[in-house]
Length: 216
Image (tube, rainbow, N blue to C red):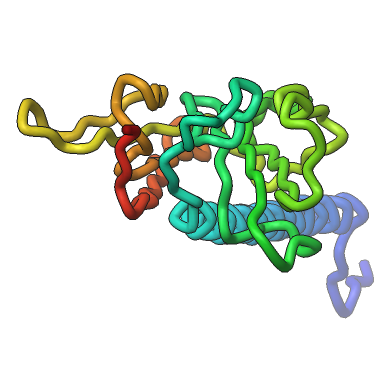
């Protein structure tokens, strides 16, 4: 009986080898895709965090540049909107510093509103107008969404807080809403708290308000 001089792969062995190789390639491609997605997500998270920190820093500067004044006795009721007002979700004031690129001169009326977008994420919408171009003061109480712009988004929660001035009776404390009549004048500082995710640390920014004034 004649014998073959060399041995080759059988069809079954070839099919098994190709199957194993295909499985290995799929696993490698899957791991590569997971790595790319994780890298892209990390890049997006870094970009979002950088933007949030930059915007918070700009807000801090705008708040610190607030126009602080004692209202004159002749101030009408409808002009009260020009004075500082704030609670956990909204804040309005006059500032010497503008955020909008088109407002390069003069003081601006500023209003921040904490709102939710269509995906349920918290953000801040900004309304800003040069004081020399403002219309009737009552219109500022009825600002429409189309007149505002998102400057911050993608957060789990955002809130404002206000530091009361120190007195002989008590030290200053953080409150959720500012009552000029109760606390006198303007807050000593304004705090902005932002949490990006459920398990992430809260970012806190504190803007001092100087000088202090007291309503006469």
